[in-house]
Length: 283
Ligand SMILES: Nc1nc(=O)c2c([nH]1)NC[C@@H]1CN(c3ccc(C(=O)N[C@@H](CCC(=O)O)C(=O)O)cc3)CN21
Ligand SMILES: CC(C)C(=O)C(=O)O
Ligand SMILES: [Mg+2]
Image 1: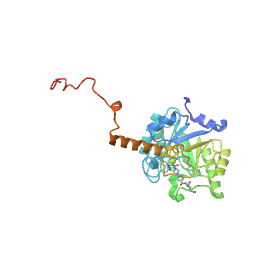
Image 2: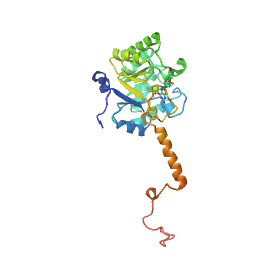
Image 3: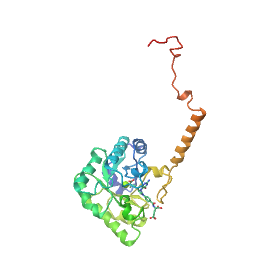
Image 4: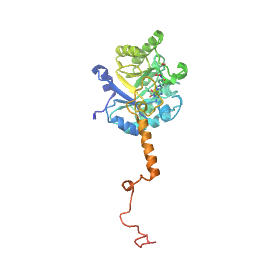
C-alpha cells in the first residue's frame, strides 16, 4: 500500500514521468475508504451522483448543497487520493462572483483540493478568475453531460473535422486559463492523443482512448453496480450488482428458514434471567 499523499504538483508531474494517473468517482465515505487504500490517485465527487445515487435522468438537477454533502463524506474517507469536487449545473454559469463563492465552498466546506467544471474556450476567462482566487481547477471537454440538451443526447463528440478543431482549441484555451488537468470525455482516441501530446498538463480520459495521461471511470460502472448502463467505454471489473443480490437472496432465505441468526450472532445473559433466580420486582 502506498501511503504517500498525492498532491496537485505530483499529479501534474506524472505527465513527464509517464506513470499513468488513475482516477475514479466516489460519492460516499465507505467507497472512499476502499479506493484510498489501493493507490487511486484522484477521486472525483462527480455530479454523476445525481444519476448514480440520487436517481435523476440527467446531471442537471444536482445542487451545490447536494454536491457539498457528498464531497464532505468522500473527504472523511480519503487520506491519500486527491479529492476533486465537480461543480454542478448553474453553479458557475451566472457570474464570476457566484463561481468563486461556489468553488470556494467545495474547498472550505467540502474539504476538496480542487474543483472541476465543464466547458472550453467559452469558460476560459471564468476559469482564470477562479484560478486567480487560489482555487485549482480541472477542465472537462468533449462530451460535457451538463450540455445534454444542446447535444441532443449523450453522443461521442469531435467526430467531424470542424468539431475536432474546436475541442483542440478548447484544450489549449483551458491550459492557458491555468487548469491543472483536463478530462476528455467520449471523443475519438486519435483526437485525445493529439491533444495529449500538445498540452503540458495531464489529460484524463473517459471514453477517450489509451493515449491520455490517465483514466477515470464512474466507480459504480466499473464495479458492475450499474448493470443497465452499458456504453462502449465502460469496462466492468467486477459484478458487484450480482454479488449484492446473491447476498440479499441468501439473507432473505436464512431469515425465512430460521438459519439466521444462530448463537454466533446472538447476545445472551451470562447468568440465568433474574426472574428465574427468584428476584422478581427488585431493581
Ligand atoms: N453512471 C454513469 N457513468 C458515466 O460515465 C456518466 C454518468 N453516469 N452520467 C453522466 C455522464 C453521462 N455519460 C454517458 C452516458 C451515455 C453514453 C452513451 O450512451 N454513449 C454511447 C455512444 C453514442 C454515440 O455513438 O455517440 C455508447 O453506446 O457508448 C456516454 C456517456 C458519462 N457520464
Ligand atoms: C465522469 C466524470 C468525468 C464526471 O464528470 C462525473 O462523474 O460527473
Ligand atoms: Mg460530471
